[in-house]
Length: 115
Image (cartoon, rainbow, N blue to C red; front, side, top):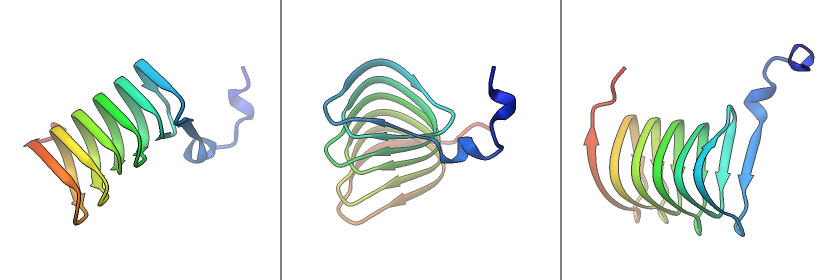
């Protein structure tokens, strides 16, 4: 109803936070960014996902950019996949670009991303 009043570019600044006290089972979808500080069992679809140090995710990620500083198990499809030194990933990665900092734990199968 109010979409026509929304200024273009607002979606670029929208960030949703899954708090450290939250545990979600299911699918989480956002047209903006998501910061995961809690836990998700399921699927996340968004523009940019940041998994913070104490956060856990078991499932599927489909994003333009993923930054992993916490524990992730599952499958990631991303334009850019980044792991910080505290990140721990176990699963399948389909990405155009991959960045891994020294100290990250990465046990992955890499697959070609379909265009």
